[in-house]
Structure formats: structure tokens, C-alpha cells
Image (tube, rainbow, N blue to C red; front, side, top):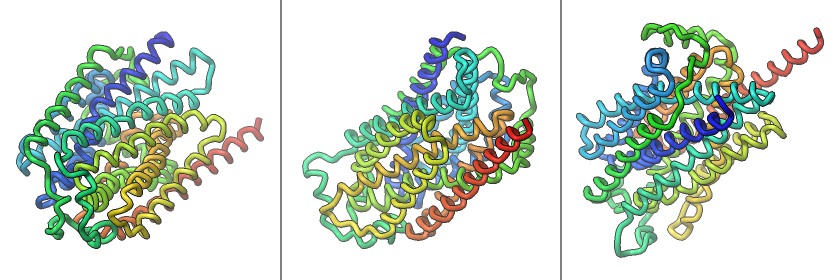
Amino acid sequence: MSRRSIFKNVLVVSSGFLLLFTAFQSVSNLQSSINSEQGLGTYTLATIYVALVVSCMFVPTFMISRLGLKYTLVVSMLMYAVYFIANFYPTWFTMIPASIILGLGGAPLWTAKCAYLTTLASEYARQTGQKTVDVVTRFFGVFFMVFQTAQIWGNLISYYVLKPGGPPANATLNFSVESCGVNFVTAEEITDNANLQPPDSSKLYTLMSIYTVCAFLSALSVLVLLDPLATQPNGDTKKRSSFGLLVETLRHMRKPYQWAIVPLTIYSGVEQAFLVGDFNQANGSCKWGIHNVGFVMITFGLTDAIFSMVFGSIIKVVGRIPIFVFGAMVNAAIIMVLYLWKSTPEEPYVFFIIAGCWGLGDAVWQTQVNAFYGIVFADSEEGAFANYRLWESLGFIVAFAVQKVLLVTHKLLLLTVLLSAGMIGYLFIEIHLKLKKRRKLTLQ
């Protein structure tokens, strides 16, 4: 494969995910607000990640060994489309099955993407004489720079479709916000806040129509434009049973490095779920209106996209550790701000500052933890990336499961504990790797 083809394929994968997650991320951002009755939106999100955990165990290797990486991506993208169609008539009988289908497609989608990009990076490094670790990091940086702009386009769409006519957006700020923010539990307990009322059905139908088209276009673009790889990334062309990945995943769990990185991987899921399920409803919707959720999340997507690319470039200069530490410090600072912040109707700009800083931290976890798995576990890519999706999904499940039970202040404490444990585990791996390298050089 030529270098030009490699770059083309990186862009095709990135743009396909951009189209798909322009729809999915925006719908996820709104679920806890537009389907708040009896917690339907939150529970559908939790169901997605429960199904994703099951999928991580059984589905990726089964699909990849039979369909190849390219067609695994196509089929998985179509499974996402089912979820958007279900949102035209959101009931327990439509949303839960659709969430299961999406969740089952999620693990092979991300495993195939990670394996495809890592394989391209290895081939490019071989052709150019560069270090594979540097190319992997750069390719993941390019992917996530494009991917994270999905927050921008998806939320622009939701903002303009859902915004009310007539009064200016800040007209809904003239009510007490005592029950919002750190004191927020559920929308059902707040009956006097017009901000928490779902938009008109006609607007939701328009929104879901746009997102469904995006999902089908993503699958079509990959089907037509992406080059299939001649071999599987690990060189194994033998078909395995549906239990193959389960065995490989469990075998991979015996590695000490995997257990050390588990807390940070779980944190990656919890912090994303907190932003989508708690910050957006307890702060965005409750204090400023559902239609403004997309507007605020544009800031998150913009900073996430920019710093995904920036970190992929500067890591070659400063190394991984400073990037991880910086991301942890930013997240810790915002957690403290959310705990102490007593918002007033006159300071909507704070929503954008918090969302932007959260996007900066998320850029670290999405690009660098992904790349870290590909580098540290290069000898068992599918098992490693399946573990990554499994533990990250567990983080989503935990966060969504406690959303209607715990106050936001308790969830901030959970974030703090997981972030601290995650950084300890990550630094343990880095120190151990450096000691191993030093001993190897000494023996030589």
C-alpha cells in the first residue's frame, strides 16, 4: 500500500466516524433531557454500554475474522442507524432493543477501527523508517482531531433545530437554580423549571431524520472508499469461534499492565458519561434550557478536536507522561470548580469555559489512552482493544446507573477517586517500562 493510500484510508475512517458520531454524540448529549420521563434516556444509554460489554467479549473477533476490518466497520455503522430510527418513537419497547443492537455493534466498530489504524501506522513506519510508536500516536491524533469535531457539527444541528422562536435564549434564566448543579438528582423532582420540558415532536422528528441520514452516509462512505486490508492486523487469518475473543480477553487480563491501566480506562468512560448525562442535564438543561445543550457542547467538541491533534504532535517533544499529567490536572481543576460553582443567570459564559476545559482533558484520554494500549500491548491488539472498550464501557454503565440515585456532588467524588487511582496505575506502568529499558541497556 502506497503512502498516499495510507493517508487516504486514515481520512476515510476518520470521516466515516465523523458522520456517524455527529449523530450519535449529539443524540447522547440530549437523551437525558429529551427522554427524561422515568429515566428512559439515561437507561437507554446504560443499556448501550451493557450490550457493549457483552459485545467486547464475543463479537469483535468473530466479525473481524469473517468480514474483515472494512466490512466489520460497515455493518457496525448500520447497527447504529437502528438506534436513530427508534428515536422517532421513543418508548421502552423501541429504545431498549435498539440500544442493545447499537451496543453489540459498538465493540467491533471500535476494535476494527483501532486495529485498522494501527496496521496502517505500522506499514507507514516500515516504509519511512520512523518509530511505530510515533506514527501510531500521530494517526490516532489525526483520527480524533476529525472525530471530535462531530461534537461541533452534531450540536450545531441540534441547536438550530431545537432552538425556540421568539424570546431570546437567556429569557429562560429567570428562575431559581437551587435545585440545579451539585444538588441536582432527577428532572422529575423539579416541576417549576420550563427549561427541562422536552422540545416539540416535530422538531425532534426533523433532528432524528438528519441523524439517520448521517448514519447511512457513514456506512456508504466506508463501503465505497476504504481499501480492505489483505491480512488481519495480527497476521491470524484463521476463523475463531464466538468465544475466541472471550478467551483472548481473559488471557490478556493476566497481564499486570492491563490491571494497572484499568482505573484510568474506567475513568475515561465515567468522565464522558458525566458530561453527557449529568453536566448537560444538571447544569446545561436545568440552568439554561435543553436547546442550549448543543450550543455549549460545541465548545467541548472544538477544544477536544484541536487538542487531540496538538497532543499527537507535541508528545514527540515532551513525551507521554507530561501530557497525561496535564490532562489529569485540568480535569481535577474542573471537578473542583463544579463542586464549588454556584451559578447565577447572569454568567452563562461559565458553561462554555467548563465544557471547553473538559474537552481539553478528554482529548488526552481519548487519544493517548487509545494509543497507549496500541503501544504497550502491540503483541495482542484485538484482546487489548477489546479490554479497552470493556473497561471504558463499564465506566459508562456505572455513571449512568447511579445518575438517578446520587447527587452530582457524590459523582464528582467518584470522578476524583477514579482519576487518582488511574494516574497511579498509569505512572506505575511508565516507571516499570523505563526500568525495564534501563536494565536491557545495562545488559547490552
